[in-house]
Image 1 (cartoon, rainbow, N blue to C red):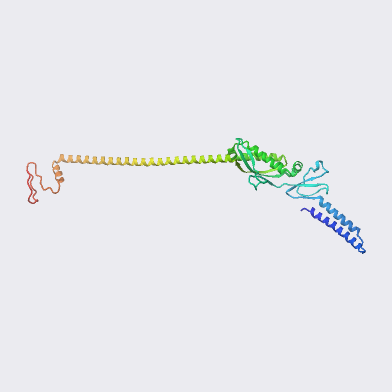
Image 2 (image 1 turned 180 degrees about the vertical axis):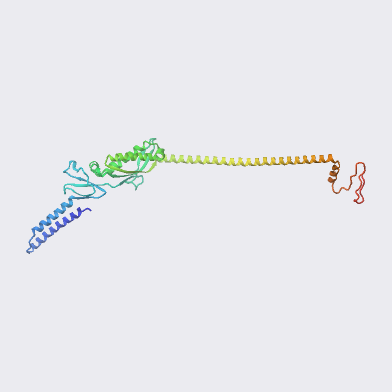
Length: 343
């Protein structure tokens, strides 16, 4: 707890009380009233008031996120060599003073957005790549003051370390690092590597100036309008090429599908022809076997041929076949009149 203001207020209260006491005594005496002034009380109020004011001016409270630098004409270089850490400290009243530095994490943003960065307007870092393209880098630097180096920071930069170190060094390192990479490497393949390089260099440069780099955030990389237009045209060309390749592949698949359908139809025709041929072959073999059997039957019994002939006659033929020694075809007994005999 910072008790210095309390002591100062108490000291001024005693001095004001002393003034009021003296005023009241003088006022009563001017009215010809007997009023003795208490020298002891005056001395106590005076010593108490001055003592508390001196004590309040000499006590300095440093909170947990601060470090103090004692500015003293009694020290070499005008400052005490040791910084003040968190807690209550005493300095020589009215001779020494304390400059406070925040050791908490701080953020410094450089952005192209008008109301986003530490400075108003477009504050992005303009850099040029190794192949001559201009890029605009948005970045945030998170840092803190080294509590053990606040005396050096005070001597070298006072309260100008944000602009003198953070801004100036960060922008220079970003430009130098971007210049080592080509335009496509910056926004794609080497972006992480580039970020790590910037972090390492900022860490070293900040440490030389009594600061800690907590983190570096590469927020965005923008390109010139000309390059953005060329990238857009390239992407459109790539998309068209991919679409053409897709169309070619689609047509190839359709042609392959048509070929497979035609092949299936051809295979079906061949299979059908083979089936028909096999069926005719089987039929021919069956007819041959039948002819062989018929020939064998004729060899054993010649009358089989006559029987076969009779079976082949139409049902409406009313004739009767007689043996070869009879030269006539006689009418069948069951037939009605009117049948003729053919010699």
